Length: 98
Image (cartoon, rainbow, N blue to C red; front, top):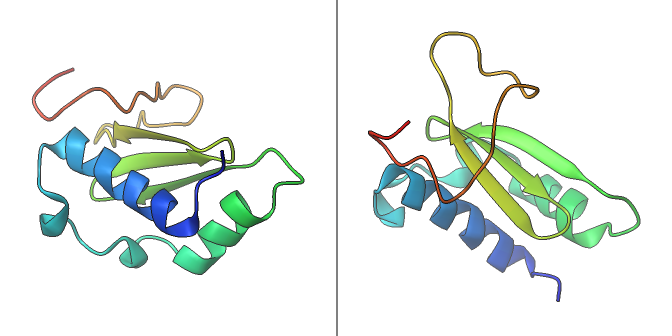
């Protein structure tokens, strides 16, 4: 089952909230990090291609895939945060864990 645009945006916010161990209401607006209409158009409405979108939000790298998967990883401050070296897992790490 494909997610709706609202479900996708909530899933992104929940994943970052979990990673930060912070209530969703305390996160900055997602719209400050990415054009929400464009994200929804690319990921949920155009199902003809396998698509992955990556962007930064609340100090985290967020990867959204067209198969309804959302991954979150903290952005490292040592310039080693490159896509080919980042391991995405929405269950970890939480703040204070490596």
